[in-house]
Each structure stands twice: as C-alpha cells, then as structure tokens.
Image 1 (cartoon, rainbow, N blue to C red):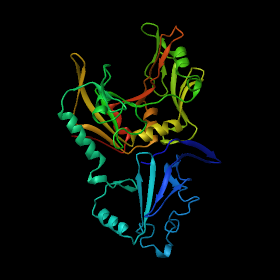
Image 2 (image 1 turned 180 degrees about the vertical axis):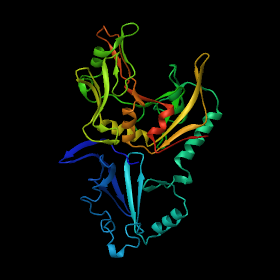
Image 3 (image 1 turned 60 degrees about the vertical axis):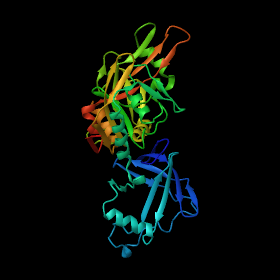
Image 4 (image 1 turned 45 degrees about the vertical axis):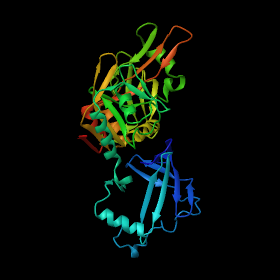
Length: 389
C-alpha cells in the first residue's frame, strides 16, 4: 500500500530486519511537514511490518495526539479510543497522513460510517473508496467494455498516448494494457489504479521479470552470462533458456536453482542477506537475486493482481479478445512467493539471448522471468477468486 523505492537488509546482534524509507508527509488544515525519518521495518521472523520514525525531528506533527492513552483513561482496554489516522497515497509516491482527534467531526463521521459497514477492511486498514467506487469496480467495468469490444488488433501504447501496431505474436498482454491506457514498459508500479494486470492464454503466466543483482551475472552482465551458459540457436545467436525449479539441477544449463536463507517448513526468512541463486555443481554462484531486491519487485507489483484470459488468432495480423471471468488476487506477502518457489510451483524460465554473437556489433536482450501455472496462483494471495465482468 505504501510506496517505497528500495529495501535495505540490516543485521544488529540477533535482530535482522528489512527497512524501506517512505516519502511521508503530515498534513493539517494550514500546513504540511515531511517526516524525514519515516520508514517501514519488516521483521521477517514474526513476520510483521512496523511504521517507524514518522515523528522524528518534526516540529508540527501531531506528537501530543499520538501519545498512548493512559491505562486509566482507556475505554476499551487496548481497543480503539476514537482517534483516527488517515493515510493517502499520491501518484508521485508520497504518503500523506492526517490524525483526527477522537472528538473531531471527521473522526465521529468515520466511526459512524465504519460501524455501518461502509468501508471494507483490509488487515488493519479500512479502505475509503475515492469517488464512491473502488478501484476493483472501475477495473471490472473497463474489462467489461474491452470484452464487449470483441476482437482487437494487436497494439501497444506509446508514451505520447499514441496506439501503434504490435506485430510480434506475444502481444496479448501489451494489447490489454494499451486498451486500459497503460503505457508499455512505463513503470515498476502496478499497472491500473493499484492493480497489476496479467493477460494469459496458456497454463503458465509470468509473475515478475527482473535481472539478477548478484553472482557472475550481477558483476559482468547478461551478455557475459549468456556467452558462458547460452546455447547456439538460429543464425549466429546464443540463447539461455530452460525451466529451473528449486533444488533441481537443469541438465541443459548445468545450473541448480536454490533459495538460500528461507525456511520453507516455517515459511519465514531466516537470513535477511538471503537470495535466490543459480549454482554450479561445485557450489559457485553464477546469478543471484537478493531477497531485498525481489521484495521490492514482488510487493510493488502483487498487492492486487488481475489475471485476464484471452484468445488469439492471426489472419493478416494478430488479434485478441478478452474473456470473463478474471482471476483476482488480493493480499500477498513475500514469504508466500518464496514458499511457492521452494515448492517448485514458481519456476525460473529465462529467455535471454545474444544476437550476432560472433561479431563486434553483437546485441543482447535480457529476459529473466519467474512463472507459475495458473492453477496454483491461489498459493500467492490471501484472497483469490474468479470474478465475472
């Protein structure tokens, strides 16, 4: 829910955590103030996430109102005491915060509407839909319009807002994104009003695509890695492919995928410096994705995800039509992803290549993707269901 840029792994004594800074702004009726120390702290051994540092060095933040209520004054022991803390997320990555005192009109109105069941609850938060409609409802309405439009030519959306034809045969996802107004490769943020959009026509669906940040690959880059482990394919091309499952050696590449630092039985991270790694037979790490690196990718993209089925045909150029129901996943955490990886449900299925490999003008295309069968997607989310549109 809260936008952050990077995750830092820290170890101090027996306590190991991940920390992520927030662009956190206190707002009131007449001023704003940035809380420079605000951050999220993940304690993977529990696991839980705390919001910390949001008052540090602040002059105008509501420090007095945020103090704990004395035990003798609590109405419901440790239950709600009437204060309401509102958060708002802006399109440029700010987290806005406003504290309403218990006796204020806004706090009293919120409690009345909350008791009436107007606001859906998501873990410890209540969601206040903007404009009276939730992002889920708006997404389903847009998908229904696209479904009713029937067959659509293969397109992508450029930064200038122009639709352009997309001739390759893998345009099902790009076309759906374009029809939803999503610019191709525009951002690492979710695609549509906080929802990650995934189009699929086969059993396997791509979850995240991100390049390793460690091992020989991280140090020397994709070209050096593919030259070492890729196989000849086509005219003067080296291709690195092959299904890699956790703890299973891939005979084609000679590499074994391992998840280091995660306990699959307890489903918790035991080493914050852990990583997903590709190892040689003698244990040398040739590529690695640190947990901190993957955490950013996973949490930003998959808090809410919509998987939309489609059909394709090609007469002169590729065309697509999108079908109901969509599969909607809500609520995830990184441990679910790592557990599915350890169980072999999530696979590493790369498609990186070096073209004109024997020449000085060789070019490279990196595609390090993790995929999963559609029938196992429910393992990744707290709530997962087909929804008609």
